[in-house]
Length: 260
Image: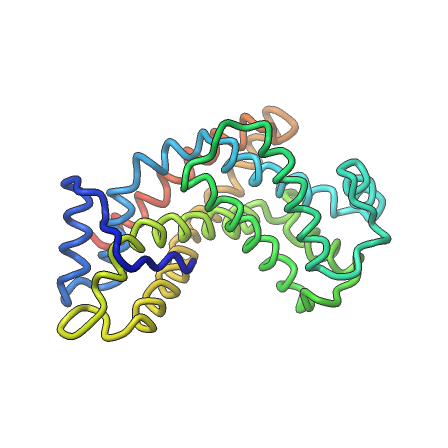
């Protein structure tokens, strides 16, 4: 989160006009604004599901957690990606090396869009949340503690939770990005936000709301994963891409349901 802008405006399309009007209407609550923003952004979200900048980090996260179920498997996975396990002094160091892997792979992709760049932020947030789920510190966790944290999200155990931490983060980042065009313009006397701190607080609550809505994806994902393994035996990169399309539609449907 944290994409607060100071001067730009939302695109002047009819669906974005509804978002601007909602922000200016004090009777519109966060849920309603989020739903209108999601509706306006749904075409861009659908397109982003096909972007390797978005689906590849998701697939990579699946592979990482799957290999974490066994100590030797985790070490082998890291070594295959030029990460030396014995040199990992903290969770922050490991996250840095995992990010380097993604950034190296990104060099093979076409030039990124603004939404593409948000996926790396979502990956960082997801990995950090996974690490902290074990009660670890990001600054002094041992490699074995990190492995156990990732193993708790292994697809065979918790594919739904794994999907939720990444997709919930990404969806929240996207909503925040689009709304940030207008949030800074709604700060001041007789406007929605009395200060920039209020606007930032709204931004943070928007992220929490997106995570809450992603519960629907968690429930759906586990069933999808079981079916995928039964039919294919693994989660391929193409399967991860297809799943994102379904997941984004689920988000949209849930937002529409919550607002009515």
